[in-house]
Image (cartoon, rainbow, N blue to C red; front, top):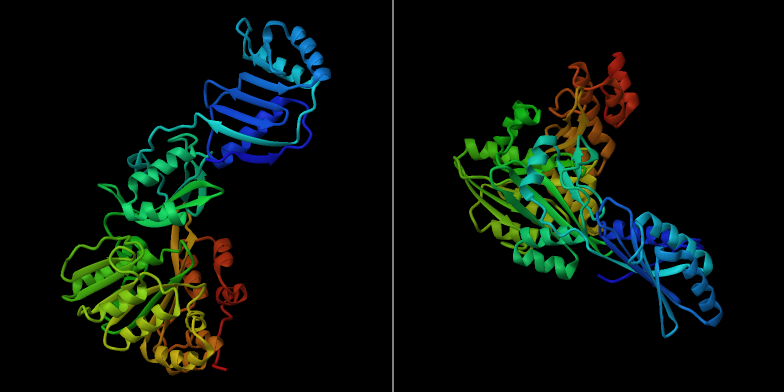
Length: 495
């Protein structure tokens, strides 16, 4: 790795320069046993015997003109055995402690004293060596994931492994402070060849990894400030059922009976969209004799053939794009198509086409609420296409489920759902007219099976699953939630 460059300001002791260099190196690469630095006319090497200890041995080289040379010679005499002093070609070398030096503490004091005799530069070039290289155990990481009930692991140079538990990051002592070398080698070990090559050339990659007997992970590796970072998103080996996910079984059973149209599961990153989609696919897999084809990036939950036949295709390995996968899927005789994520107009166009030709299309999308999904989809297209897209959505869209995870009383998290069925004229008209407010109003009508976040969250509060503070924090419209809580809520009329 290239040396780092930083300005440390005016410092009085070379040991402070060593400390600042070490601090910067730890942020980028991990804890070094050796730090070297240079800035004319000074060079230094500092070493320590243990990653937890302070630096105790120093080699300092100073290229000195005559005036400074005399002062350095006098300073060396005053240091005695604390440092060994040699001179060659105007370069004064101090090794602290010297061969007869007492201990590292004396060496540190000597370096501070020596620093008083010359002006330290402000800008330094520095590097490190002796980083940890012992292998990281993936088995230990997965066992810790299960023990902590974590959703993610983040491996970052200079830090202990970070686990996301109930959406909060916690450091763990299971592996100690990691180095960039350890993380890079782990990426090389677990990445398929083509993904390692992608990481080397593109500086980022994403793939799936299986720890036998413990689970799967969606792995994301990338470079930040020249150093590798690695993230694991945990997925169990068996797909959770609706009861385990705490989502309404009757709703999901109803959706599993759909034979055509589009079903969108929305939410922000980390809201559980993929897991809910996997549970629905597993339900169809167990109850219907059909062909399910998935296009994912990467494959996260692995579905074994049950009553249905499942074909899972990974982006980059089995197919080059979501659009190509969907277009190709129409020739593979599928009944159900799952698209990992709709990211662009081409993919959405292909998905709508598939949903309009007798296939059930299940997909995910990033959105804060169900009523905003339609406008988010339409926004991917040029203005001249948007009216056509709305018309196609009016015909093909069956349901949108938007979810977010709320802190559960006693620990853990539970999903809150907002559900929009395209089942009444108010909602259907609002889709084609692009009227988001009327979509939200339509979702509140008695004839629709839809429900708002506020109503769903209030029910969770009534069942004592969440606190009133959490309910108000996560309700999109707090005033509406308060009306429901006080009993003053009335169903609005369409505008």
